[in-house]
Amino acid sequence: MLVKPDKITVRIETAAGVAGRARQASDDLKIQGFKVLGTSTATALKEGVTVGYWAPFYQEARTVAAAF
Image (cartoon, rainbow, N blue to C red; front, side, top):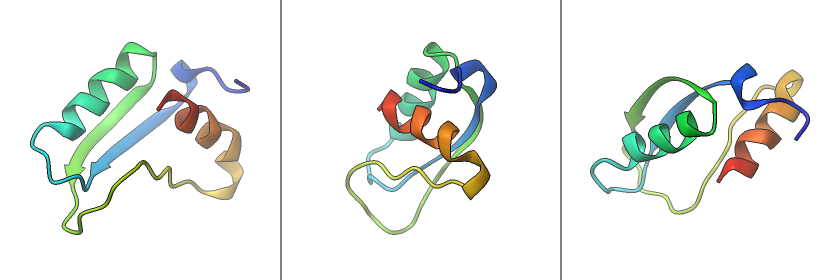
């Protein structure tokens, strides 16, 4: 881990179609030390985890992906 979770702020969007999934992911990441900006529900259903990021934050994105 190159960037400590307490230095990373994330926003969670769930597309699982399961009520409470974003809140659960938020709680799980907070336990690990991440700061959660907020959660939302996407309209298109998807499986798995996708970590979106802007290029300068590649190492932070790797840390978030490893948390799952």
